[in-house]
Every structure is written in structure tokens, then in C-alpha cells.
Amino acid sequence: MGYVAELNTGNKMPVIGLGTGAPAYQYEEIKAAVGVALQVGYRHFDTASYYGSEGALGASLTEAFQRGDVKREEVFVTTKLWDDEHDDPPAAITKSLKHLQLEYVDLYLIHWPLRLRKGYTLPPKEEDFLPLAIKSTWQGMEKCFELGLTKAIGLSNFSCKKIEDLLNYCKIPPAANQVELHPMWQQKKLRDYCRKMKIQVCAWSPLGAPKTPWGSNVVMDNPVIKEIAQKHGKSTAQVVLRWGIDKGVCALPKSFNKGRITENFQVFDWCLTAEDHEKMSKLEQRKILRGEDLVNSTTSPYRTIEELWDGEI
Ligand code: A2P
Image (cartoon, rainbow, N blue to C red; front, top):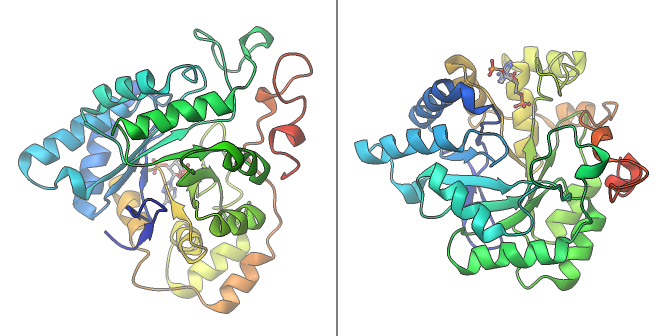
């Protein structure tokens, strides 16, 4: 299982999880990748109702449970409430659980601090944005927890400011915040704040999502990281993931390739030096997925990306 992080619920989250952000038509590929990951030792899987991978993940896990390879309680599964599901989180998680063939998930997150109308398509148009109602959305999330549909609830893509607002009124504090985080977007302020508030930070696109339309090769092609990797006889991806672990972050690398799934899990029996960390702390910072599509001057709750991220960009 590798290392685990303890959540404020007392539950344990393995620090490396398989990201499964892929469209539903990749069903067989996703299903096979989850099977490989289970064999390699992964016990943490991340999906979302938006991705379309819940069905394939659920099918692969169900087969593994039936074979007796692994027990339900040994696997940590996260899914997320999509932007057009804010009105009824218990109904949304019930739908996700059906796709996943599970009775509960381990963590349920608000995917974005954003509410969109049903039937919209991405990127959202002016008429798709609805006024934010995070307080009532969170109350719906708390209901999911109370109903036993999830072992923990949390956030995704929330700034320190947005978390602080929520902490002022919540009955159940968030257990985690899943955000873009990698050596080129280190988010020190958010990490420090979340540590203080006992909120586990998880990294989506911990490799910077190379070779994808929304991502970039800046992390994987960075010469400083490459040089550190060469020195240790490790891959760039392994150095990036080990860096995250050392920072107390749970990382969710996505790969559907057997070799890379395996490689991304081989990060527990070696470590980076203080000098490596010092070098990586100086890397130029720039968020890759900035959310330009999520802001406008009329209907979005955010007029600018600075407002979306509360200046933390
Ligand atoms: P693939 O599925 O072909 O392995 P992120 O996790 O940051 O979102 O990045 C996902 C992207 O990185 C995918 O395109 C994935 O491709 C690729 N990837 C995952 N692991 C590695 C690795 N160890 N080395 C190189 N590319 C990787």
C-alpha cells in the first residue's frame, strides 16, 4: 500500500492513488488499468461523476472483490459532485455509487466551487452559470456523510479563502482539498493552511498532465527535475511524485499504461535529499489549468481568474 495519510476522520488514505480522468468510451482501458494497479499495490482510486470512469472503475473493483484479491475495506475510493449536481448531493452520490457498484465511497468532494445548469456543455456559456450556494451544497454533502454514503467529505479546487469561509459555518469540516499541485505549482500557502486546519491536500495532475489538451509538458520536461532524476537513477515522474509525498501531499497520477502505472508506484523505497528539495523550491511557478473558461463579467460568480482563485494565482 505504500505510505498512508491519516484524515481528520481517522480514516487512512494511501498517498499514491490512480487518477482515472478519462471519458467513458475508454471503458475497457480504464478497467484494465485499475486491474493492473491493484496487482501493483495501489489501494486508492480517484474518479468523478464528470469523468465517466466510475462504471469501469466499479466493474474492475467488483471483479477483484469477487476473486478475493482485495476486500472493499482495503480500497480507498474517491468520487466527486459535478457542477450541475449541487442542488442534491445525496441523489448525485447515489447515482455515482450505482455506477461504482459500491455501498459507500471513502471520500466525496465538491469538484469545483461552481454551479452550472443541467444540460450545459463545456466550456460553459453565459446562460449556464447559476448563483453559487456553497453553504447549501455543503449541507447536502454533510447529509451524504450522515447517511453513510461516504466515509468523508471534502473539496476540490478551493482556495484558502473559500475554505476559511466554509469552516465558519460547516457542521462537518472538510477532510481533504484536491487541487492542481506539482513542482511548477507548489501551492505552499494552501499546503500550510490545510495542514493547520487538518485538511489533507491531494494533487490532481501531479505530473502536469503531459500529452493532454488541458495539461502541459513543463513539469516532465523541466531540466532541473530531469537532472535530479538522472542522479538518483529514477524517472522524472518518480522524482515529481516523491517530491509530493515529502510535502505531505497525496498524489493521483493518471496512467493506463502498465509500465508507467508500475513506475509511478515505485516511490517508497528511496528519497530525495535536502539539496534536491532546495533546488526544486526555486522552480518558476505557474498554474497550468487556470480556469479562463469559468469566469465572465456577467453571469459567472467570478469575473476574473484572480477572483476564482481569490488572488492565490
Ligand atoms: P499514459 O496514460 O499514456 O501513461 P497527470 O497524472 O499529471 O494528469 O498526467 C497524466 C498524463 O501523464 C497521461 O498522459 C499519462 O499518459 C502520462 N503519464 C503518466 N505516468 C507517466 C510516467 N511515469 N511517465 C511519463 N508519462 C506519464
